[in-house]
Length: 433
Image (cartoon, rainbow, N blue to C red; front, side, top):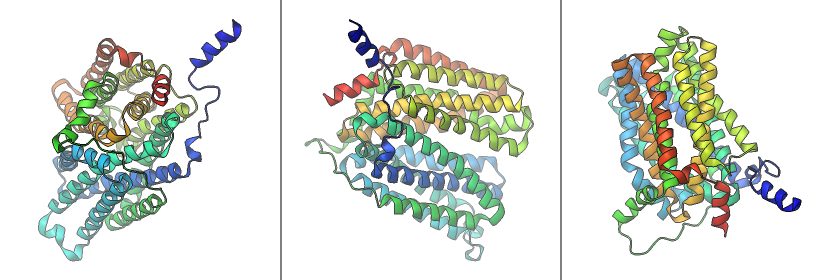
């Protein structure tokens, strides 16, 4: 009797006893993959901040900065379904290679545009820069689903949570490091050296990617039209309560909890810390996300994943509300770190669920739908935050966003019982059977 009870209890634990937090790091292909992710994330983030500063220096127009995001978001969203289709039909490593090279080519053009002797910017203004940003948006649209699909082929199914956790950790470290390196190089050495540095990181990424072994292309369903293949990923997500629920929760959290878009105003008018303090405020959520990734690497939320995801999104909303009410810089930093920690719980659970539930032949298309959900909500969320701040005032608008996030959690918990009861370990065992 005692032995039976012990077996039952141990089955319900969250991998706390025998879990190996570093299991995926012992797989050489995955180590090369993570290194590639790290270098490309740094390069993408560096280019983003360098382009922003260059365009603002040339125009002194805040609207010009908003158009940068739009120039990247529109082609990214427009090409997402085609990119997912390509990731399920063609060699995934080759897709990553081709579109990273395309991104490299765009950065090379940005470097040439910055050479004053060529006179390109003097003649055409910032239009050539926007054209390259469009190319960057297309490149990233194709790279993302291919990366997500390839990652699932590099590790065994029982390590999906572990791989998602380390992937998230590396991405956030790169997202912290990239803007810092880009800003320092731009400030001390100028725009041309900054773009050359981006090119160097991309070359390192391409070199590392060459060491990742090719994986076979999953078999296609015969007889499907192009439209059917493009729409099948969207239909799969809409018909699956767990996937739809996880993506929707993250989407609305980003959409309404967009305090990050208003951080320059908080830094200047509420906390009075200037641009130096703004840098710390922007980094704080990502620092919190890295901390949570390391915690989850050792104690993955498998059995009660749905419950933890609800707690994570609700905690994110509460952190944003408290941040809006804080007038102390250090307390605000702590609350932003908490928001990043809570948010990363849902990111890792969503990524793991997506890998476990999605058939290998559809990973690219489902990942592209996920990019539409999350990617579009970032841009729309920034717009929503600005509009709400204009209509309601800065602090009330952020409080409203946090309360809306809490409301969405309550509605999702009621309307999506399968998500609320989500057990990732059970899904993994069923898929193996």
